[in-house]
Length: 316
Ligand SMILES: [Fe+2]
Ligand SMILES: [Fe+2]
Image 1 (tube, helix red, strand yellow):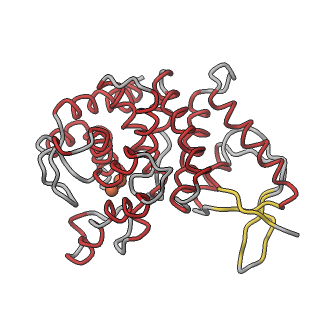
Image 2 (tube, helix red, strand yellow):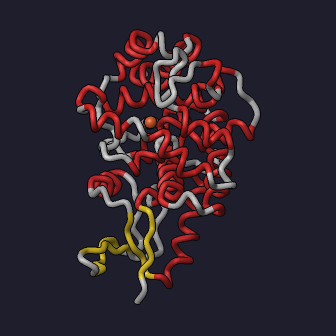
């Protein structure tokens, strides 16, 4: 029997599966979850705890998996489906995470790039059109500190920030959402572990860590299907408006404005997810620490987003 891999992040929501799911241990496939299961609540938490990026299905059930996947996606994007926004957000968050993993695994695959780009457009539309959409994505916590889930959070903040800055063009927003999603693609090639804190790295590790924008850019720039904006977001997302970032110490005038948006969004998610700055302090912290590095307007808009997502929702 043949087995094919599926991404764990695509298993979300209350829809029941039409396929058995296997786990691979020492080249053996072991039945893990029987057909007819759904992935919400306790079962989803348990699955996430396992930290398995891939699971397996029998190849003759691939069609069932595809049907499951597209039904899940369509339902999640359909605001008239009757599904609560929290549930729809979880499915869409998982979908974006899987798209990020796909591109990071094989940036040369043009078809996959186009699928992810179209998906990024739909994602941006969802975030902008619906109340609580931003919150529904950011409510999914990134406990395992994965690059892909960090990418989804940064993409969410970046689109929300761009909306407040007045960006309206669909193609630009699509490229922004996609670039933000995969901005850390270069981390797969550095020695310092992803999510390391700057103050905890020695000189050698820090040097290797700081190569990630360049390595990421280098990896994709030869690929004709990559949009210029996406490449520049990867190359410039660690630069800052005041020219103290890396790798080139560019300042705001020299930067792609989309990369600066992603940089500000990245600054916030790094603080909350990797440094553990609590929600109640995030607004103050970004202003204290980001004021010279990022445009005041960006920071003020992010403060408004933090208020909408974390403060107001906790109060209600
Ligand atoms: Fe980065
Ligand atoms: Fe990042």
